[in-house]
Image 1: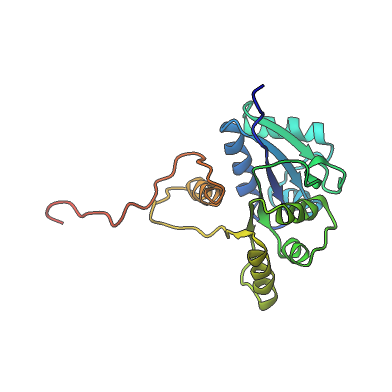
Image 2: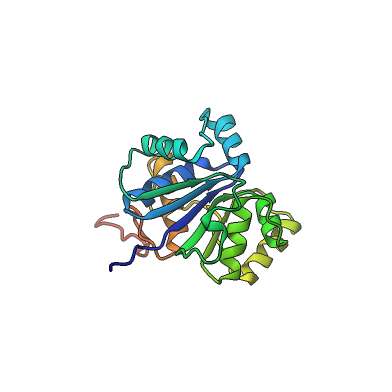
Length: 211
C-alpha cells in the first residue's frame, strides 16, 4: 500500500504579514502538498483590519474560502479552529514533515519559548519541538528588544529555525508580488521545499562590453 505524504503545518499568528501566509498557502497547494492550516484569533482580526478580509472560523467554510481565494484546486487542505487543542496536529502521534509559523507575533514567540500553549498554534509548536521535528518561525516585529532576542534564542536552542522575512534586492524585484515570492520561497527553503520560481544568487553580474 502506498503511504500518504506527511502533511505540513502552516500557522498564521496575529502579526502584520498576512499576504506572506496567503501566498505560502497558494504555493504549497500548487505544489500538490498536504497542508494543515491554523489561524490564530489575532490573525483573523489582522486580516480584517489590514486587508478588509473576513476569514470564516468554521473549518469547512474556511477550506472553501481559501480554495476560492487562492484559485488552487490542487493539494490537500485541512483547516483547524485556533482553540481546538483536540485537533490531530496537537498530538505528537500525528506525523508531519514540519511546521512553519508565518508570520509569528512576538506574543506567540514568547509563549512558545516559555512552554505555554494557550491556543492550537502554540500547542502544535510545542509538539514539534518535543518530537524534534522541523519548526520554522518567521518573526514579524521591528525593532527587536532584548526580551524578543532572548525568546528567539531560546527557541533556536530548542531546535527551531528562525527565519525572519527579510527582503533582498539581488534578484531585482519589479513588484511587491516579486518580493513576497522571494520571502516565502526563502522561508520554505528551510524545510527543503522548492516552491515557485526564484532567481537565486549566482555571483556578481558581469558587465557587458564597453561598460
